[in-house]
Image (cartoon, rainbow, N blue to C red; front, side):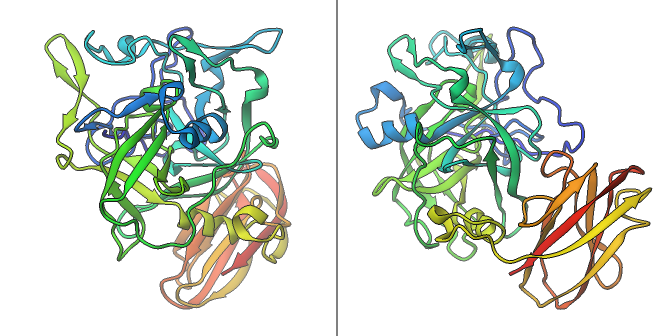
Length: 431
């Protein structure tokens, strides 16, 4: 299928890209062109079906391991306004049906499924979720919902407040174009999801996916309860860049951020990020866009290894990094006011980088980093040109990374958003 892609800006004004409807919120917009599937922050690109529509509800899928990945490791990203919790902790969802949200013809599948999700994700450690970078740039009011699947025909698995998690911080995030073309984020939840839920294993190494190999996507395409699509295959592995691979997965908007599994050991090989258009007009209603198995553009899937490597460069995890100790960091303190987004009146720290070295710096997400107020960090090169900056990576605190293409002396400039006042400790690592 095709995937829906959404990417975008939104820093301070992290608006809800889903519909802001009180009871009948619409689901993720269909994708089109080359953007991604997500719906959080910007551009849209939709999913499509290749050959046979292989999507199946969780209860109906014959593979026990894939059912377990859906039930134990998969999350739907939703807005807080997309759900209601009663006094007993039972959660109900505020959203339109798939048919209503997309104006689908009565011939289409899953018409009565609700559409509250805007992206998908995968639990990869006790309190870490892997998703697409375009799905989340700041924590905002995003909720990470487990158990969003059908347990039998016409029956939803009950969801309670214990299944709903908030975002504590966006630990790493990258959304680039060109080569490499990367789109990923790893989010720290407000509490551990284990042992009730189980992290999905990550594919070892960084080898290209073999062309023709089968892959599975699990997530909330078009915002509906989790579906398992095990019928995709790799078309283009992009071995020279290892940034993303292209596959014929049946995926839609809302599948952005979904875990993509290789079908041998069922480890996470990538993150669904963009693809073909989801739906096309058929008279007065719309139908799924169907391509030949080898037709259309295919769905783009970011390799998982860059995201994990990025995470392990700033944080620790026995499961992901082989150590619970974060890498050693260098720190400096600052107090600032009237810095106009870290362009004047800043506290500065010079750092020498060799070509190919990566610096990760923040008032959050790096060991020893802290902040009070709305911090803003900027990195400039020897000419004084800004090469990286960040405002709200973790709430109102900041984190950014930069890989030097040329050796030189760079400067971290610590300041505050706009002309406010703030203070803290900037911590940074060089890899």
